Image (cartoon, rainbow, N blue to C red; front, side, top):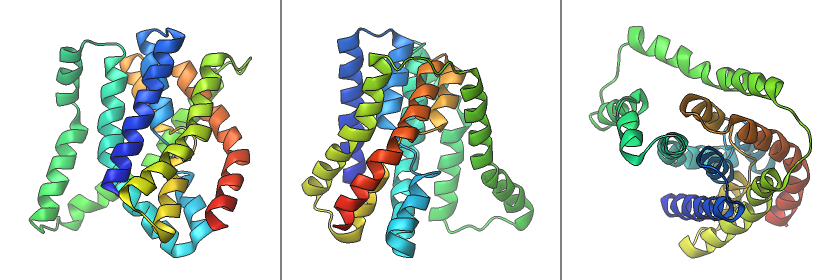
Length: 238
C-alpha cells in the first residue's frame, strides 16, 4: 500500500505540475492545481463507497489506505499550498511551525512505546477528532457560498478530468506495478479515484492559494463522480 500511495501521489503531482506549466498558470493557481489533481476525498466519500461496494472488509482496507495516506496527504498538501506563495526556505520555515508534525511525532512515539494516555487527556482529543469532518464540511460550504459557478474553463476542466479520468488509470497501473490483488486492489483503486479532497481548500486559504479554483474543482469533480464512480465500480466488480 505504501508503494501504491507513492506511485499515485508522484505521478498525479507531476501531471498536475505539467498541466500547470502547459497552461502557464501563476504560482498560486499552480499549487491549487497540483493539490486538486493529487489529493482525493478518501474519507468523506471514499469510506462510504468502500463500505457500500465491498462491505466491512472494504471499509477496513480503506482505513488502512487512509492511515498510510495521512502523512503525505497533510504534509504534501501544506507544503504545496505554502510553496505557491512563499520561497522554498520560507515554506520549510512555515512547515516547521505547523503543530501537525509535532502531534504526529508524539502520536507515533506513544504508539511505539505502548503508552496509554489517561481519559482526562483522551476525551477532549477524541471530541476534537470527531469535530474534524463537520468542520471541513462547514469550511467547504463557506467557500462554495463565495464561489461563482459560471463557465467551466479549460483550467478547471483539466483538473477535473485528471482527477476523475486519469487518476483511476494511474491507480490501476500502480496496482499492477506493486502486485496488489483481490479486494485490496479494488478498494485502493476506488479510493484513489475519488473527487478532489476538501481539506486542501483550508490549506489554500491559509497560505494564499487559488481558493476559488480549488473549491470549484471540489464541487465539479464531486458532481462528475456521480457518473464516473458507477462505471469504475462496474469494472472493479465485474
